[in-house]
Length: 487
Image (cartoon, rainbow, N blue to C red; front, side):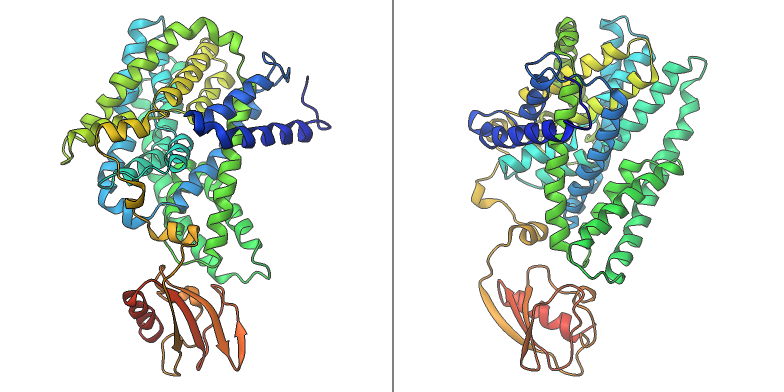
């Protein structure tokens, strides 16, 4: 069956529905949801029972890039700065030097066990060098793992920020494979430009996006998430246009926005959470359709060998060396090594050699696909067990709830208090979003001139307003009073 305009919506909606229903029960059997999405795509493909023929790497790459934009942006929005600040140095080392070490060590192994040239080997190593944000965010959050001593923020920071490094390495070694006369030194300026411009653009667009969101006055709350989507794509495309790394830019932009007071933040976070799940399903279904299992079968042996080397040697080498100067218990290092999940991102990156038309592109794609599947199956299904075995897990009731979790989960508050806004208060004629209001407290209603107003981030506080505030304890109410009275 060929995909046409007439049947693509019907087929797509059926596959989406099946994925959601099957994914709902998958964890009862210990199978990661992402593998189910991938399997459904493969079953629906030309080698499966569905017979849908989809052999277009260019379209798959486009879908992959769009999906990664949403997944990385959503992950960035959900990243609490207070949680990642203590592990920022470790996360940056893992997402840069750790990725480089993984790529080089795996590439060297591939060079000696295959007939690949050194640049082709390093290209394969680069494609699978980063942990996959979609896989890590999905599996950690779906399993609701509570981990000790900033371990989870470290893993999420690494997975959200290391795709740019893998992307740059992939493009660099692909350039060297295509242009054999170039030297390794020739790609260093490109590497530096991608990372520096990407980081600077991400922060700049984050600041600009906050200003635009809070200052523009839209008539409908539902338009604010749409505005953020537009800003997200602008950040990615503009950064890419000037030679920076778009993936790094949107992640940094999202982390900045997620830790600022912006109008209708709760609606934006919830919408992006849903879109991230949708994009994960679409991405894995698409890649499942793109894969021909009959073409992968001949590479199962070498694929398993490379995959085991990556899991057991290359990834631990990257983690242990990059964290050598940090004080960290050995069992934490082992667990970080194990959570080196490869998922959809390497498969998306593997479409670049296909589109470039290099000689071993199909073999590289097949091996990368096999590595991603085995990584999710082997590592993804054992995260909880290994956390318990290494004693790095916590009981579910001990899980720390950060400010963003509180905003998303609608956690109940323990008490309600009223605040009278006097004429000399700082908050008079100020919007709620412009106040340094504690994130653990919520204004649920404003009484003004015997009328009740439902507040939003753009609501202006007036003199003599009575604010009804929900919070947890007296400490929160003290912060509320300070935000209202003092600048």
